Length: 138
Image (cartoon, rainbow, N blue to C red; front, side, top):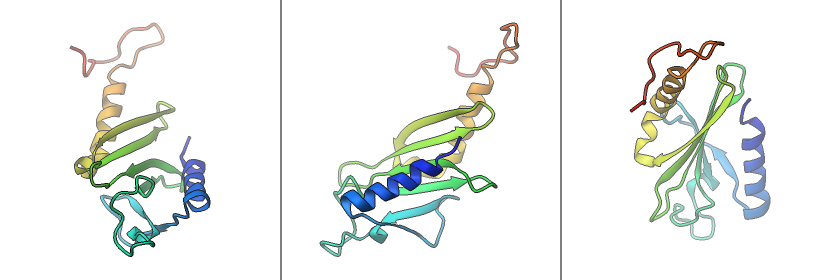
C-alpha cells in the first residue's frame, strides 16, 4: 500500500515518452520531497515551464520504511494551478484522492489528517453500532 511503483513508472514514462526528466530539488517544500521537470526549465526555450501540462511539479512523502505514502502532482500552467493529491492510510487500508488549488498546498498534512478524522468518526462495531460521533453528518 504505497506509491513506489506509481512514482517510478510516472518518471520513466515522462522520460521515455515526453523527454521530461524529473530532478529532485535540494530543498523540501512543506515537508515534501520535490521533483521538477528538467529542473523547472523548458529545454526548448530555456525559460521556466509555463504552459506544458505534462511538466507538473511532483512531490512525495515517504514513511520511515522508505515507502511513498503521499504523492502530489501540481500544475502551474498559465490557466491551471491545481494539485492532484493521493495518499494511503494504513489503518484503513485505503487510497484517498483529492484535488485543490495549489495555494492550499501548505495545508496538505492538515487535509490528510482531517480526512482520516472524518473516516474514523464513521467507524462501527462488529454489530454495526457507531463507535463515536460522526463528523460531517448534516
